[in-house]
Length: 299
Picture 1 (cartoon, helix red, strand yellow):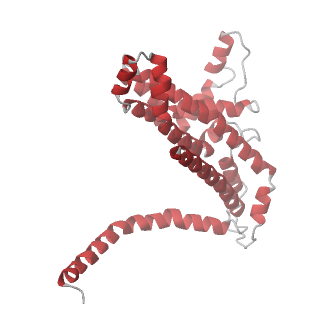
Picture 2 (cartoon, one colour):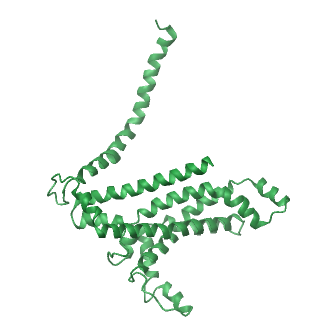
Picture 3 (cartoon, rainbow, N blue to C red):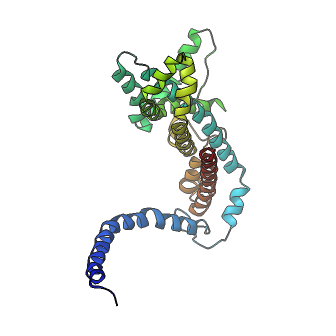
């Protein structure tokens, strides 16, 4: 037989449970409506021939996935996306770290440096795209003015195959490096000054302090920046769609190909299948990164 104390606490626990359920209910409802249901419906669509016009909707099994794995345009778009991720992630890490190190050294007018480094990140993608379309204009753009000023030939930045993706990378680095800069600056300001003072007493110079104290202390935030940047770069769409005059095989990212399959080709079922193939790629990247991070922590 339960004692009186246990009996007296049961109504209170039930009341606390209902209060907690009441607070969680709006979030769970929104999570189901905007995450769970769209994902489940998307998986269902990937097994049908549903069209944007409402036609179709018949169950076709794995036909969409078979077509996706044998579609050369899809794998070309996937290759472009992976290449963009590689050539954009490394500069976005190195440049952001360098900017944070410069500001952290105590440059005059630090508020101005912080504002100028971070300000582009606050602009919309449409604004950034239009700015860089002007800069890369082959006739009046600033990019070719710089090239001709140093004696080089002008380039058709956005009209030349393979150079168009590099142009998008330059614009993306300028646009998004400010966010990574803030992460590195916050990490630098959390390094205790006592470590630098002790190193100075031992005779370590600025470069030795950088390689022995600063860089190792920044490794955790570098891992975070790498993960965030890889995931962001894999989702390339806005800049490529807005800056390029048309969709080409050398610059089309995978998200743009999904958009074209669904909203230009009217093939919702096939676009859903491509989306989940891409989702599988992102999932693999995330698992690999988590595995590498855990091994580093265990060491």
